[in-house]
Every structure is written in C-alpha cells, then in structure tokens.
Length: 217
Image 1: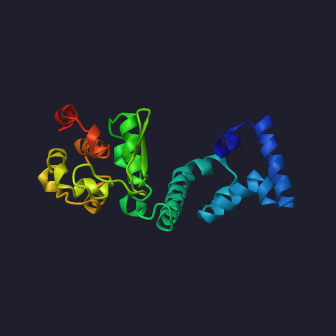
Image 2: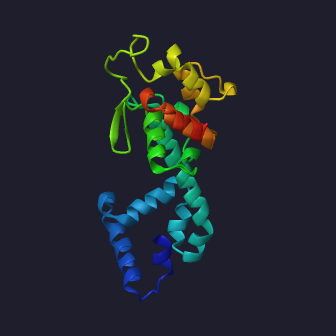
C-alpha cells in the first residue's frame, strides 16, 4: 500500500490524502489513530527509518524485500516465543518448525486429513473429521474394550491388541513404541505416507479398517 501511494501521481486523491495525513500526524502524534505514525514506528523498529524519511518510491522499492524479510523474521520469533510460553499447548514449540510453514500443510493431502493432523498436533482431546467428532479420551476416563486399561490416544501405542496396527502403519525404522515417540516424529520432514499413517492412527482404533491399511500402507 505504501509503495502504491508513493508511486501514484502527486495530484491524485490518494497521494494528496497521504500527504495530508502525514502532515497532521506530525502535529497530533496519536499512534492509535494514525496509520502514518504506525508505519513510521514499524520501519524504525525494523531498522529502516531512512525509508520513511526519504519518502521516495524508488528508495522504498530497493528496500522492500529486506523490510518484508526482517518483518517476517520478527513476527516469527514473536509467535515462537508465545508458543514456548503457552499453557494450553505447552508442547507445540517442540513440534513446530519455528515460523516456517509446516510441510504437511503443503503436501497433496485432502483438507479433512490436514485438519485431523493439525488438531492432533495441538493435542486436542476431540477431533472433528468428516462431519463426526471423535473423543480421544484425554481428559476423562474410558476403559479399553480389549485389555481393560484406561483408554487414551497414547494407549494405542501401549495396548498389545494394537501391535499389528502399529506395525502396519509405521515402518520399523521409525521406532514407534509410545506416544512420546510419535510426538518426536511429527515434524516438518515427515513424508506423505507418514502423514497418511498418522491420520489413520489418530482415528479411534475401531475406525481403522483393513481397506484403509491396504490403500495407504
């Protein structure tokens, strides 16, 4: 927007409005109501105060990419720090690839699968999938119908009745033996087959069918 303003004709309504706002902002320096002050302060924080001072479209064009890169880095660091301090999702900073986009979001996966993976990574107790809610029993007690122990998402990796399921979904080299191992593996380098395996294992065990296993093995 700033680039567009500075590149517009000096007699245009857009440029004249900008000049008027800039002049008023120099007298009444109330940041809340002034886009000019907000932009000026942001450029100063990023180390590009000279861009605001020169107020030149060519000078802005030269520094535009470095400005956006620095802004992206600063916002990414801020988001990462907030994740580290999170009480609701305290583990997420261990799974996240900093402020870069997680690779599973750019893989050729259907939206319902991406949603399920995202919800599981965020440690949701209930996952929504294809019009239905599935309770992973993280916050209330349920009994496993196979072994009688408390049922939970992590229980899938402990119950001997799910050993064949684990073996079919995860290759041996992934060394999956418990829920913590899963958390360590759900990182940006995970491949498409692993994403699909993760998706089907995150469903209630009685919904994982042989058809699913054959299709995505």
